[in-house]
Length: 523
Ligand code: CFM
Image 1 (spheres, rainbow, N blue to C red):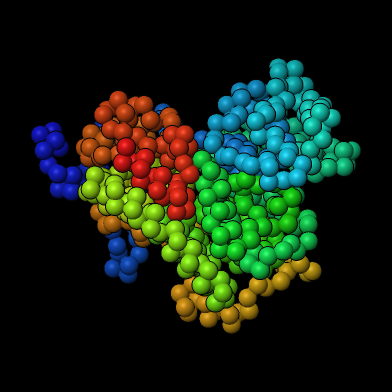
Image 2 (spheres, rainbow, N blue to C red):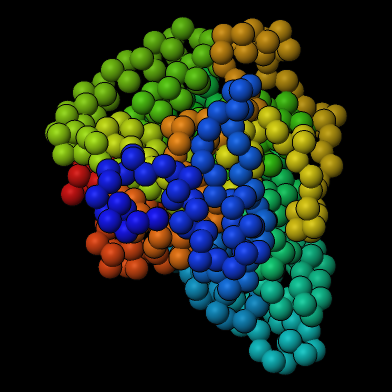
């Protein structure tokens, strides 16, 4: 492709297939063939379906990927935001140290009577050669005992790092023994970093562990007329606080969030809620599915990113309950919140309209944040996830047709059955059918492609090389990724907005979050 053309042609005029070709041209043949399946031009097939995006496959060795490891997904992402469980990293000190307070999942200890908050601490067994050679179970038991003696927590969880799997420490046996001995909940995760192709494996393992060891332990039905759980919301930059504010205003009771601003007691009680709302499908859909099977709680996909999405998601809750009082209250709240949003938007629109963005983030935000850019009149030229699966791109309906590969077979699939006592269908089949006829979809997620413009580029597990190539060819006005990519991208003259940790800003969820986002992007 001619360099001059690249620089002078308006972005829309470079055909995406040429961009794709250009991105692959310098790769060795085998690498190019593999990457070609992960670089996809968004189109619609005749039947309206979207193209296949190869994903959740191993990164090619030598390629600089954005991905993290299985341990990060389990310990950091899903369990990390729960303030009153002591999370012990069983491994050499680096894994514990580098996962210590690096994700901006906030919490409010004043929410619980005991005020317990272990999140600022880093607990690790600090394995040495001694343990690698002779086994680390003894040291792990000591660590659990020591943590208990000092802090008297309600629960302790153990996270395995790579060497633990290699030397074969039985962390689950240690957990059982210590649970018995201490009389508190102690549970362990076999979430060794190598156990999957990315952190996504760790999400699944964390979901399984929570389901087996915590969810369903406390049957007390608390107060509240409309009792919901919010799944896949991790309170990055205070997002969950903004959503809690909105729910409270609407008169909706939040039983538990998985896992932003959460506590173990709330997890234990979460099976008493009326419905599960799913924000981040990738990280928590397993819990939603298992709770539906075991307890009869239906789940609905929501998106509280963007003011429109927030209003739409609140209306879905109203529709689910079909309660005129709640529906009216939700409309009042939307009407109260929207003027501030619209005025902030009016302010930035003259400067943001027509600008272009690219988003390469995680397994959910690269999709959801497109809504905020759309509200600002901006166009998403290209987007992709780091570790999502095909259902997050193409829609959940294709799950039954996906083959499990060697890597996903590493992860335990729990066999879940209806609980003989605790199963309670929240809606009758007739009611569910009626709601479906009204357009409320359950257990469904359309994925990223269906909501993206045709001709947009969708790239799974983008490499650093491809990032630089994309920027050179497209010259976007803003690039969204994380801290590892930030400064390299900015050195090319393109601003990078961190959508993992929000560059120390936020919240970006809900109504007030949308206002923050408009203003930060405008800057
Ligand atoms: Fe879900 Fe997340 Fe994300 Fe994720 Fe993450 Fe995150 Fe993310 Mo960073 S749970 S998939 S593993 S929304 S930590 S809060 S921002 S990559 S897009």
